[in-house]
Length: 232
Image 1 (tube, rainbow, N blue to C red):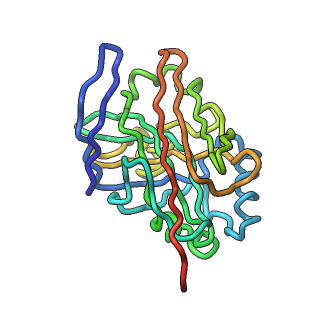
Image 2: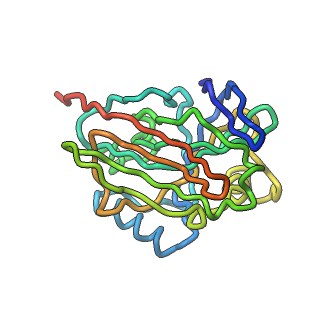
């Protein structure tokens, strides 16, 4: 179990909320554009990662991997971030946030679930109500930047129109038979990501944002990556 001390922004202001997370779910291969998704699969295949058994697929990770800190520690230099929108079901309400599915790429070549469990999952503390953005969901922009040796560059970018809709992701996780299924309280789901611009690579710092130009607001996330030595 993990608890996120969050700030929920609404059309009428903002409020504090403690989001309790019992089940952390990482949805993968969630692109609507099959060609773009194939590009991301090929991107990972080039690193030795096997193709997924199905698409989308739902990985489970310990909720204690969530962090709101401004830095994480990883083993070696083979990990990288992935910017993703986040769905959180809490107190009968569905909220939308921002997170990074930071993943150990070396471990990913022999076990995707293991590789995801090895790294902390940074998450922003700002959330929006899904009901406030559902009518313009596809227009919202998700992007990420990486910094190495002082050089900051665009790493990922696209609109949520490129990803499967939240309702479809939630229904897929609950089971196809449950046509109107949502997430149960205490469940948080990362919604998948875009291919990296210029290929997957590590960084000293990873930053991301979820931009809603319709309502003139954004959620931002940033963290440093400290690489620990691997001695055996």
